[in-house]
Length: 292
Ligand code: MN
Image (cartoon, rainbow, N blue to C red; front, side, top):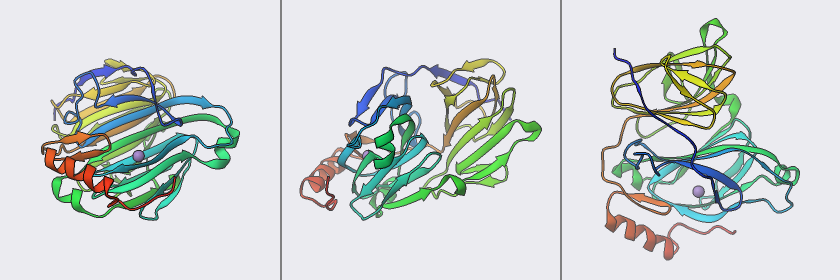
């Protein structure tokens, strides 16, 4: 078994607002050799690093917008988001919860700070990922997995090193509850100061670590500080992280979907023609209706 080395450690880019409720650093697909294929099946990663929103009577967020051809995964670390979609789905994503929405053949949704949380305001920290779908699965109907924090399976590490929370995929003998279309591993690794965890994924799986809190050392060498993303090379299977202080790391690893990508705005298809079709379907109201 070979070591999976660090390809690069990316610092957070200047933040931008998505709507008025999400202040995000985009890590994928912009910049530093990270186009949509490089981390496939993870084709977008927006990270709202901890940001204090003052109290607001009117919840901030993003109004009605479409998605087609992939899945959106929202992980709430601090704060609360209310979500509604055109298939009648919706709910509250509370602290520690994960919302896994399969947009597939098309959905409209809106994402706002939860009303009561908004009135109080406070620290807000969140990740939104887009996970691509293979061509055949882009045609399936939308669905929605609301994964409550309590439902996430946990692997207790030896030596009081910490806990690996398995959202999707598998860590050692612990399996994630999220169902995925292609092999996807998504873990929250919570390590105590000095705690170590080792990971093993096939070499061709695209793998990255987003440091949510604290600082880590990877393979005893490379340091990845808070709010940085470490992109792992596709040169081996195993790596180890060690927490320099109490640390919290989002671990992503998945089998690449080796199909062409045609992406524009909220649509990710395989060809230019399918993209045009998606805009047309949206314009004629085929994704249903949702009140703003
Ligand atoms: Mn959205």
